Length: 127
Image (cartoon, rainbow, N blue to C red; front, side):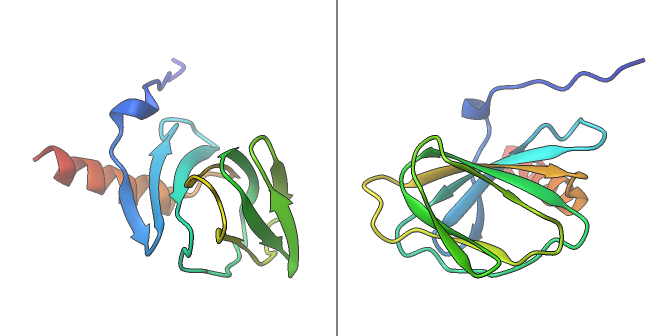
């Protein structure tokens, strides 16, 4: 039987990630992909990193930022998206946005560690 997972982002709490970044993980019931909504504040802590096995699509829903992929900054505004190949360094930099950046990330294959971390966070949040 096919598993259907649904919900509403407005009903999910924000999980602290690091200075200036919080997130919500959703679609955790999907078998091969998952997604996050990240709220990124001006002056966020930078975290250049790679995902050796995960491709990523980043979509800016609100705000303005520079999104660095393989050392190249891409100026992103509402509606902008960018693909990040597996194994390529990337990070987001928010420094002059009139509002916090809302950034949706879609990962393939799914980031199991995100599902585990957010699942535990939700359990503790509801206690």
